[in-house]
Length: 301
Ligand SMILES: Nc1ncnc2c1ncn2[C@@H]1O[C@H](COP(=O)(O)OP(=O)(O)O)[C@@H](O)[C@H]1O
Ligand SMILES: [Mg+2]
Image (cartoon, rainbow, N blue to C red; front, side, top):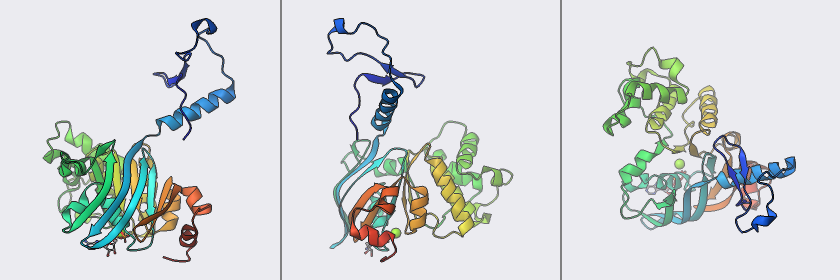
């Protein structure tokens, strides 16, 4: 990452403001107006963008055991804000285990033991004073198979916020969440009908809406399209791509085309070890590791 320029800041309107470095002799700075060439402006803009890219989740030396058997082996990975990170790798390599560790879903599985750390906005998710229920409230999850509650469409979306004492306009929140999940137009006239009457693809978008209603910053998705037909899959992929404007997403997929289509960053896992991580384009077209090359070219897995 490039070094940020200390004397450049972004004004309220998004424009750049340049001030003289504080340690400069004041006599040397004759004018507060500094004329910048387009190239310099471009470079500063890039620097500012880099600086504003924040790490939301920091995984360090993470190992996860089921009893004696180690499913995740010393993984270190940074998840950047408002990016889609795909976790790929052969079946059984530890993708779901790693994903579930990010919102403490593994806590429900007996005999799971964790070493290393995961911090969210710098706060240790496994710290002594952290409430795992609160963690799951803030870091949403969408599963492989759509799992709507046997309730109405509206109640599915309103359920989380209402049990958490949401005081705003619930109907407005339901509408906003369904719109963001690209489902509103299809269900607006049947909000009080059972969610179980929706198609599989609609049910999965409903589950995404249900997660969004909790206003999470980070959304975990474990093979969210694997139970869906190709048309529903492509709708969900489009949706995931749109969601990246507002949310950070980690998506587990064994479908490499999907990873290549939707993600910004890719992490390749094999037998619990993080083999390679980088920008998706690089991982797929110029992998650094032989194992990655073999996997993305379909030679194994
Ligand atoms: N609840 C569990 N109890 C014991 N072993 C498990 C459990 N869940 C997964 N495993 C084992 O951990 C390894 C990683 O599994 P998983 O994270 O589900 O992989 P993936 O999602 O990449 O297919 C596998 O060897 C699997 O058998
Ligand atoms: Mg899995």
